[in-house]
Image 1 (cartoon, rainbow over the protein chains, first blue to last red):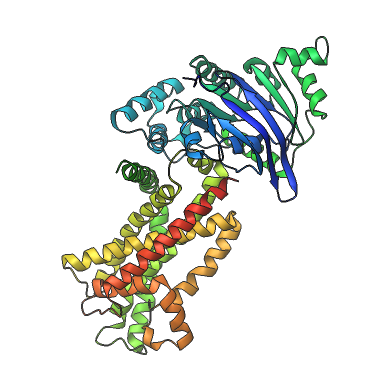
Image 2: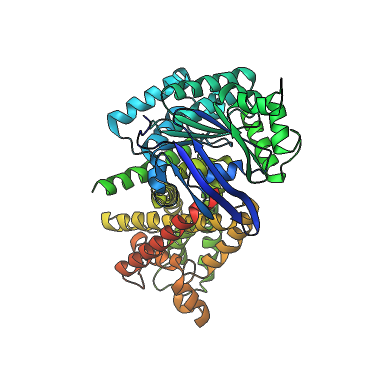
Length: 269
Length: 259
């Protein structure tokens, strides 16, 4: 699946985003290899969601450039959208529709038609383990089932790159582990996955490589083991986070970020 | 040709999802049906006795029935935008905007769903009108004219509502603006009195109000003896032009909801 002509699935160069006088992201330069799970960490307000929104073409960069799946986010946004999947932090499956209707809507908007669409929807239901409940309204689903459905929706068209914003926030440990298994399965198939997370266990278990953002700037990037070794012997990822972000795990964030996180937890819980 | 098919496929995908939701929960449809019943059964019947508004050979109740049909379309469609703010808060808008679908197709799909909902409301108003002995035209062409008018009118006001939602972005602000807009749009139209009765300044506003053209088209199509001030082609040309402008504006503003 990876485009061999492109050395990286995601490459950003001096990516910057300002909202009036507020700099949300400053000079982000990253290279994400193909078929890996890449974690973007940082306290609330560090610029993780801004970075994801620019890479998924929801936000225009103020300056700098980026390519996703080989396409320029500013000059080829539609091509970028054809090659990515996105699972927002918020609850994005429509509760007033059934799982199969949600999948059909996503498939049709991705341009899948006829027999191909039906086959992909069937595969997606099997992937999400939702065949038995496919005709139930999503509002009757548990948080874990909804997240699995959302990942299935975002990967119906076999995207090269999948973005997930806090994919396991609000999920119980079993549901969280099931989501991890789905993501690992997608990585094995060759999908590049970029996730944001506050969960250090998740980052440690799942991510092949990590970047820590702090106040809109890239603080450090590397493999989890190498980052831990830089901080000290027996250092955990929590120590790495505190060391490079300069804040404790309970600090940081603003009203909106906290509200969004709590809303997601409430809906998924 | 392929691009047109993709565009239509995207439009109908969104419309299909919206209609399914409407069928599952018709509460709003039923609650919106109460208002036209009150206007026709109470206001209309009382004002028919007053005979203060010159309506030619038509009974006042017959004259106002198309106006109340248009009003029910307006009042229902103008709050359509609140759903999109809800979808924004849930993250559904973000997910739709990350697909390669045309932005205007996403808007058009919602507008078409509002159009289909408008047709159901029209059926309710027809039933009330029949019960009140309003003289309805039952020929095929007039009925098709009314159906087309109701569909396009619903598309116009629901898209207008989406434009407002994209600008204000919160439910509280939207409800306030929605309430402020509906009554002026209704009273600055020919829904319950003819254009000739209006003072000059109000007539100027009424002529710029798309609701006036909707009511005018419905009046000749719905009622026996009803006449239109404008030619049907003029009314539909104005309405389709307004819808096109609003559709383009909404498609431009829609991505801003995810920022």
